[in-house]
Length: 594
Image (cartoon, rainbow, N blue to C red; front, side, top):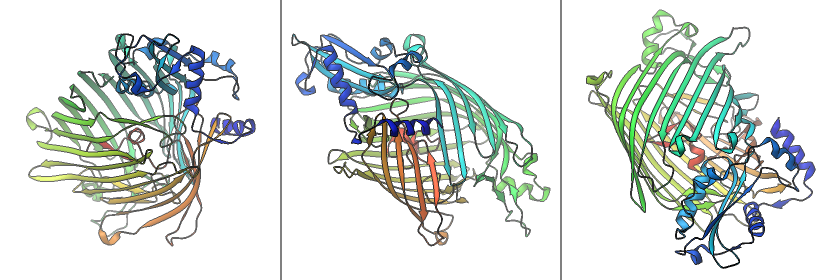
């Protein structure tokens, strides 16, 4: 509702329609004029001593925009120390463009600014300084995450959040989340720089309830508790860190397709059953990990520690499991119950090479992209001697490579795999291959982007399913339109994205797309599904860096003519690691859209 009202207001208020490529540049120019400074080339400033640092903070609303500045009284402007402690350059330091760029990345990562820019400047006396320009995001807001296709919604999340409590980058939230079967109420608290800026504290609590659908009855359904104390990587020069994660989850899991619990037909009986794929899951995890960061041009991050986890999956009354099907259900549907106490060692590495780019994840604001190789490898050894259910060796790893071409084009490649060696058998094998391409901006035309990925699984003792539909890359079809246990999946997307256009504070873009993919357990089951369509992308930079999307798709594979409308709170085709991390789905240590 908020987004719709802002959209209407922006359309009514904005008399002009212009390509948005200067949102950041306009703020920098205003700050330069306000401070009486002149911008100099980063290479002309290289190695010179900094005499001063000027921080120019723009509030959320400004004169000349639809929403008047008087509403800034309801917002805590970020205090200067929060900005200054993320800077790696200060008076007396030699100007280093790499440190200036990293400082800007540190500030953007806080997610409390709609805009961050850092420039070398000179004052009237010819002294070199650093100009830091920020513009706050509206911090007290009702954040929304949602996705639906056709008449079916997949999820809705509402968070009443103060993202910048007292202007000190402390976050407190009340959360409401709705799925087709459950709803939950919860709270979140996070202090990114607790205890004099040396620790990060994060805590969450959700109480889960089953929805009362069709008079079937609702009520308490579970609880989810998490607590995390860590010293994360605040900057690339930091040598050490640590983490103590904790989570407890006790709830009822239900496999959903098209808003309904999926039924299971026992392959070991002649009867045709529709046993609900539902069970109670109890999950507990705790650990202690030490971290070390090494290297200069190529950064190495090593982590070593001990992980404890316990997972228990059992049928419950909603499963309505007949006795004759119980053993088969446990073999073919339930994930294995496991207790694991495992020493764990991991290594990640990446090239210290970053680029600023626009209009991949968002509109008209700088986005940071790490270039070159990125690697990950992990080894965990659950031991029966320590209390594990089985002695095993779990290994995972991957190699990604990102490069730019023709100035603003991007190519991103990834290969990742994982597996578990147990009782002489290699199980839970998984392979992910992915390629993503974005062309440079082609004048007023915009740019083309594409994604192709293949996910293959074998000997999966976790009995997981793979799906494909309007919720994960096949617009034109309902959510989870195709769902298969023990399957592989291939998925491809081609999008044309227009350059962002601006009405007042509203950023608007258009999209045309072709989606294709298949989910198959055997090669002979492979059937390519295809769809085409159009859509729009909308951004309100004062409120969020993520776009809202609406898409209209139609299948073109001979399966019948249907129009399918879908919408969500992020791009349908993720192109950057920042977008990938939204999804709690990993292969070989790399996030990927599930």
